Image 1: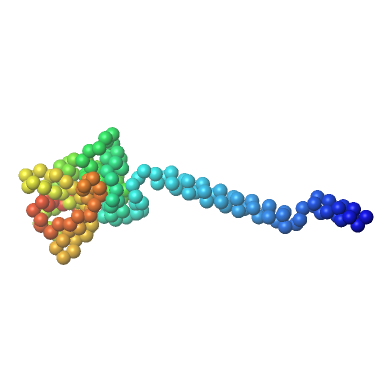
Image 2: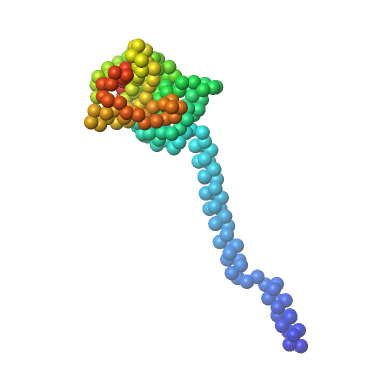
Amino acid sequence: MQMMAIYRLHKILRRRRPPCRRHKRKMMLPVLFACSVAVFSLLFLLILDCGDGADVPKDGTIAEVAESQIGEKGKVYWSWYGFDEPVDWCACFVSWCADQCGYIEAGKAPKFSNCQDGVNWFISSKNWRQQNITPEPGMIIFFDWDRDNKVDHVGIVNQCKKGTIYTIEGNSGDNCRERSYAVGDNVIYGYGVIR
């Protein structure tokens, strides 16, 4: 008899849901909603950020943008420019950095893939400086490696300290790299100033 009473009590208790179970269900809905929002937000941010190189500082200077790209390969830059296959991409890199800052759209810098076109733009816009000046961060530095009066390469001045210019250049050993030169070095062709 006692056994029968225990069995009935067990059966009754099994049918009833403990009150804590209802609380857990009510609390789970907001938690599931919050998790879903977080997951979709992360996916949205990942989709927006896909394939644009490393993290680019928002509203940064061109030197900050260039610095954020150190170590990157060229595909991001030459494909952004519109090329279907690899090209010499130092000018594409400089143009890409300028575009990230909004300088191309604002007419402060050219979109160029040929170094000489960049020089011509800065000269015609009266923003050209000769090679013997002490440059400032953010200036575009053009090079003539073999000193034949033809521009061979371009980069971005990151800083200038104690007579040394520190640059960030694309297509330097097929990477974005930091390099340094003495102020007035004879391989420097001149500078474009972004205003």
